[in-house]
Image (cartoon, rainbow, N blue to C red; front, side, top):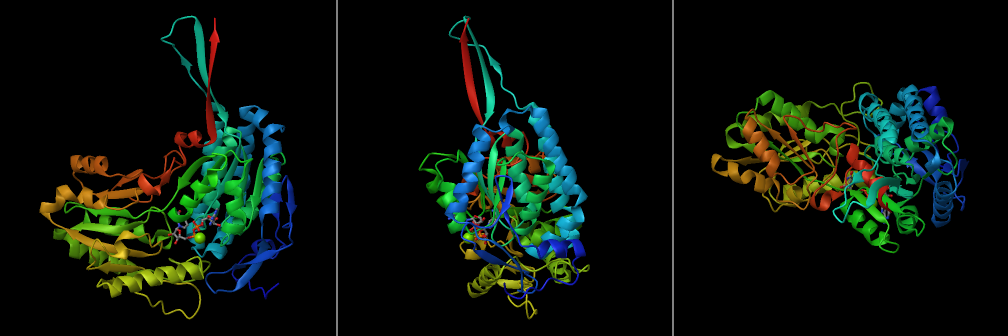
Length: 500
Ligand code: NAI
Ligand code: MG
């Protein structure tokens, strides 16, 4: 193994966990990869290797899918009472909550995000997702239906678990994405093979230990570490998988659809975005400034719903851009575990190069820098300064493409354009989220209605709750996560008709 350097700020418990010989979780056992191969995990604040994890390949995928298949076809999980399932999910939530500090630390070290944020956002939201879905386990039901073809029939529907579910998640909220995926599938009585993101496998491995401790029967949840092509692709294509749920890039989302075609497994996708934040002249300026700044800078802009296009009415454009630029300039960049950290490094070298490349392409195409820029001033780690671009035009790459970093394009609009601003906001292949900033009630609702996006926030952005369905129009995805809506992702509907 390469030299291991764990940040001296991590607690003993976390250091001990990180330096374990990491295993995957298959059929209720912690196992190495069939090939014996491992791959390194990096600390994005330094670029150092902190540990290594097993590299799953096709054989490991087969083992995990067969375990999930057996657990679904023959095991107790889909057959146990919904209340028993709900209690186990609740127990997992309790265990996770008991280890909140440890998970916040792991998440910060592995992903780069501030520990102070992981502790109040990522981990509690994950706990809440398990609790919320524990409650649904007992409330998944069908309907009785009156038939027009006569009164001699009794018809009803039932919602049954869809079967073996493959879940593939990204690195931006490693634990929370695992919770968004696992919790509803568990509540519905499915069995699961979860593939973690190769950049951030650690919190998912720790979560697998808690799943084991909570007492889930073997094979109900299997957790793999590995790369997209080596592990994700064979999982998405597997004939014994009934459904694949994916979160990640739109590009890979399209590959998932192709891979799923072999056995026509069901697919849900949560993909990229280029979400607009629209500020009208009557919006309270301070609230609009701090709200639209956090819309883009939260989680370093590594959010599929980041408010990366900032449309501001010309009357307040200068004030808002100055305000957001000042917020950007004042944000303290530091390693995530540093108590003063307000923004950590990006997750990986690849992401760092991509985001800096976008800032440079914006400059080359004529954009002006109001804050930030391509130079971070750090001699190591994947730090990118929060950046505000003006003077853009709608055809620039920085305006059209998902950057997935702390980079916002600010664009003015005039009185004459108020009616057309919705059209401009919709002028993208994506349709994940949007925010509207105004005190005018009817304008807010009118714009909300016109936006082609799965989420519209009014005078706020990035508000998440386990009860709120989240997902995309257009190329931002298929289906919804969270809320009652997500149950459709993990159930089949059966119509039963009885001749009386
Ligand atoms: P990605 O889409 O390549 O990876 C996401 C997950 O899919 C990972 O677990 C990965 O191992 C897996 N994967 C990759 N190729 C696969 C394949 N052929 N078959 C099955 N699974 C596969 O995202 P990546 O490379 O981490 O980031 C690239 C860009 O994607 C980012 O810069 C960002 O723009 C976007 N992205 C969007 C996310 C979102 O939440 N919508 C999350 C992460 C990235
Ligand atoms: Mg990729």
